[in-house]
Length: 140
Image (cartoon, rainbow, N blue to C red):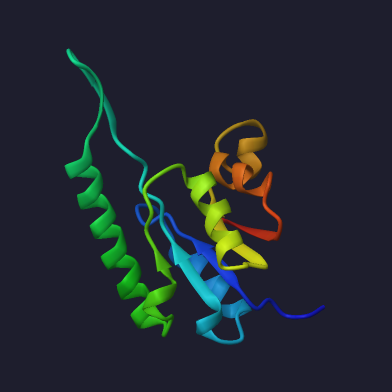
């Protein structure tokens, strides 16, 4: 089997992410083969005027996530240009980025609670369905 050339590592920065990144680094022949992603979910709220998006809160979370990812990238010699912190649906953003960077492997953590989600977790399950490359789910 050929080695993986483009590895997308989807991290949950607010949960245990070290085992996920460590496994990806073990698989990669070179840290430059790795791209990191953390997806900030948009904060939606309801008020008397209707539906709104909490942009200040979301932008702060996105900036914090990007800074954390950049620090991880620097520590592990992953190029800054391969660090992504989009806002949106985690499953959709991971699918889009995996195609954009031509990922042949996605590495992500899983800590689901029930049913099929017990095996994978809802995000890992969503990523697995519809992605065109291998997915390695690391049990956290």
